[in-house]
Length: 113
Image (cartoon, rainbow, N blue to C red; front, top):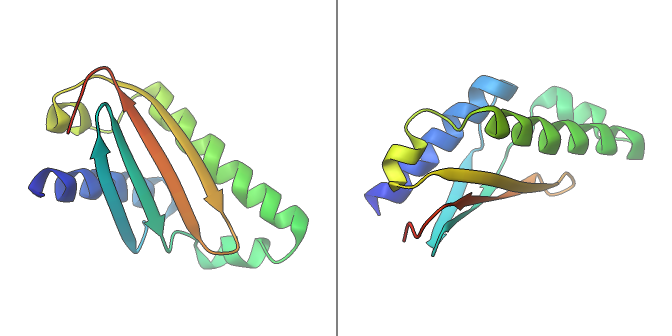
């Protein structure tokens, strides 16, 4: 359980540094070589304002999903691989703007559970 808590802290800090606001709540489970995280309460007041229109929702969704994936593709957050004792391979993510919920699936090179 401590590993999950530390994992969530790493995820929260990165998103706070990147977007100016981290998720209010994160639920993570480890399954084989994956960590699956559900992140609640992510959007900044500015993003909520932009997302009032369909075009704005697309902009926020695109920025949130592609930006976070690009950051992880460049380099995983400090301490992540050490914590789970596995090499990070890829991040898959999606965001439901209306409900302010994001799901991220972190893929590693071996079992982490």
